[in-house]
Image 1 (tube, one colour):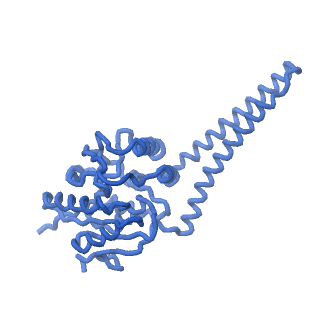
Image 2 (cartoon, one colour):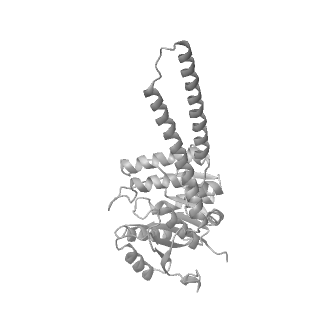
Length: 321
């Protein structure tokens, strides 16, 4: 008898003690309707300051299909996703949020699209229920991935997506200190589709993404998978140098044609400030790259796991023992 394919659900968890049980229950109810598949759920606690891991511990006791992973400190959503991906073994892997806004009961739409032959599928929201700040961050991230990572203009990227096993295997080969999941998917395949799903309003709490975290995510995205910022810096440097040279020629000609024209102190200071700022900007950008190289060479980990539930030290699941 042919073994049923398996779906692994990966959920990064942060401040979700009230919403997580509902998300897990919705996945279980959805999988009852998708009887042709087996499934498991990987809950990765990103060192949440509330009782999130206590909730995960309770869920793991009640269901052996649920695997719990607890980080020693906060490493961020993308590191949590990488941990879940590494411990997943499903033929398909579905990643979604812990707040209930991403509809787990529509996972069948993503899986059906994978069955049609696509390698990765992202959920598209016709009406997003995020705050204006979060929507602004998503818009900036959308443009950044299009310019820096060469994302197709018609491809919508979200935190609710599904990928095939071979894409996961390629993603987890990435061991540098700053993972960026979107870049890893785009690096592995271009055969990506969108499916429309509903986006729910947040019932409890607020988004964990602050301005600092969003800026860090953008920097991580365009420095981890693209050298375009360095090329842009080179182009700006060339333009600035050319402008400075032309301005110098203009000043000399003006002085020769009219010796009585005083040399402008204000214009000189403006030029110095402009070019000095450009130099500092470019040096800072180069320093960001060098710093990330240094940290990666020191083998700084993507994450540190304090505790694992329903999985032993050798990486074997309870169902496999």
